[in-house]
Length: 175
Image (cartoon, rainbow, N blue to C red; front, side, top):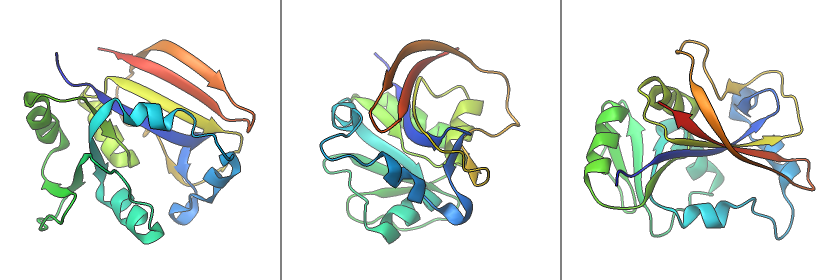
């Protein structure tokens, strides 16, 4: 069975995953003690994380980089030496996905950013998409979806609402 590539991400209602200047402050509005919006259960389904360099750098700056027990790949355009707990991958993301899918394992989690997600969508490499929409309109920032790609059909799987106003929608990609 092929390992699935899954995107699990939060966005503003108008589709931004970050505000101007890579500001993720809007995510705080969904913080509620004891509520993780299914993240812990989701993390049990994956053993590999891929993310873009800007996302990785932001996580390091905020000191929130935590994928214990997971294989982590940072997709970048630079040849960089890998460090403990993660590997840099310089090249086309579809090559990395092909390499990862050749090995046995659980699902592969794409944790952003937008350009990496866009690249994977353009190559029809995303199998599932879970978006947690927060009740805010940012108006500007980094959009989750770029407008320069082909139409993509989705199959609705589920939707959940939460007390914080967060709406989480899970789709399978139709290929």
